[in-house]
Image (cartoon, rainbow, N blue to C red; front, side, top):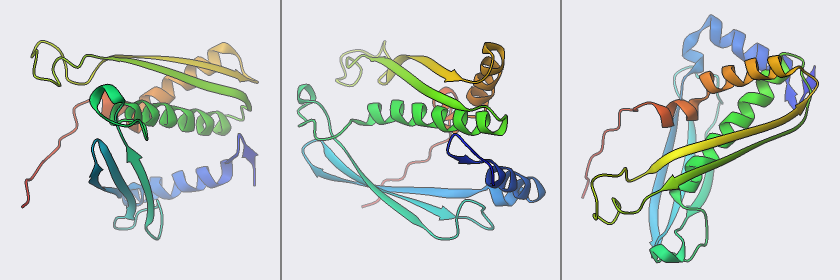
Length: 183
């Protein structure tokens, strides 16, 4: 077994090969259920569920996270807000992609850091203007890495990570969402 950057390279290669041979193994479902707790605080249960012959896992796994808002939005700042979780999700996805892709290339990472910054304009949220987006207006991503590879190799890996990132895809491209009101 070869471990690079804390990643089992052989395990990743075996997983990719099983999915290559049977693409259905690469599919699974993520479910969330979010309930209002109090004020601006919400609590979400996240559940990963195997789908069909999914490679992802054989049994469900559950996590519970909370979200809140800052005092300016009448929250109590007990947890990150939803937009902050989006930035966290993007950065985490990029970190994982980088660690795995570098490991597959035999590149050892000594340090890796992503800094994300996004600007938001609450005028739409409060119904004061339709001229601005209700979400982030832009996101700036800075990546710093110290590794045993040339800048050219790192840039190539970075391009591949951005191209293959599930969360980058979600934030850059329209995802079909259906919503149903249930009483």
